[in-house]
Image 1: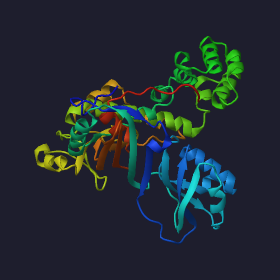
Image 2: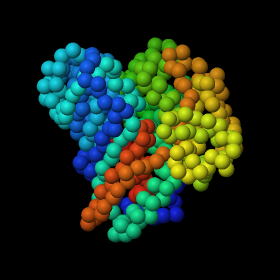
Image 3: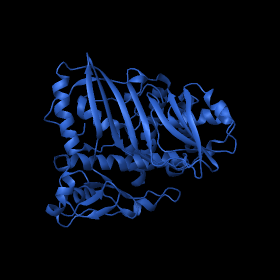
Image 4: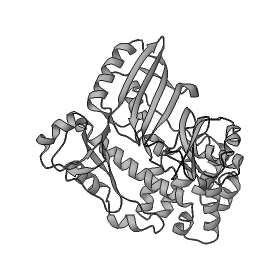
Length: 403
């Protein structure tokens, strides 16, 4: 469990997302469609569907290829989400077909000249209901809200990046270390965490070296696992078998490792999350531009106003490193080698900087009996779970019932 910024303040408890209506998120677009162009921008409200699953169904219903669709952000299935997608099509008649997809409602449409790309967002607005909160929720919320608004919210990625087994980052680390035997073992899963009987039998067989038994036990929907085993049975090396996985899956594992490494930096700096140190790389929130901090005392007033914040390393190619003890020690401990990021020809793991904290704005709340209703806005790329964990002080467990 990563440390809390508000560790000295008790949480309000409560449960999240008992019902999709308990978690409402609406995108704040980076720009508005101009009204003309080859791309149809469609605002939709969805329930019970993740963004990618929704696009698959919309493509099937409309007869338009999935690659013609664009989106600015990935949204959870267990929520009510209002987001905009783009469709490269000359025909507006597809809107009727989109409205026929279960769980999707078309709210409006307009045309624009370019495809909507991941990250084309200013942020997201959330309305969240916490059920069965503590009896002292009113007083606790007041203190927590004041702290988070003044100091910012730890910009953790959190457990959603690490997959249902909680080990995506470990697979990414094994890839960078070129230990593909370990990467495959982690990819197959940990039998101790698996409730699905056939999956557990397959993992145990694989662990015991019985590849044919593992292949027979894995359900048909485990296509990637079965493909790796087929390649191993055909005499391919661990590296050949593992790197034959879909490119987007391999990239996901490396991205998870990046996220895990960043979360460690947030945790290590939790006490100085809003304090600039000499050698920090600071980010200007309004523009995303970064600069090296030479005179912390001169820059600190801007940090106090949440105009700028220290950043953490998103490790990768062509990295800009901070000259701080925390970052130097982390790089040494993880044996970060720039050459490792160039070892996968089809995947370019590019370095960047990410602020250690973000501003939570328009934060409002009310307590209605045993429930608390929160509303707030976060910038693009940050997660509501970072706000909720500070407020509730609840832990979370990965879901391992099904893949």
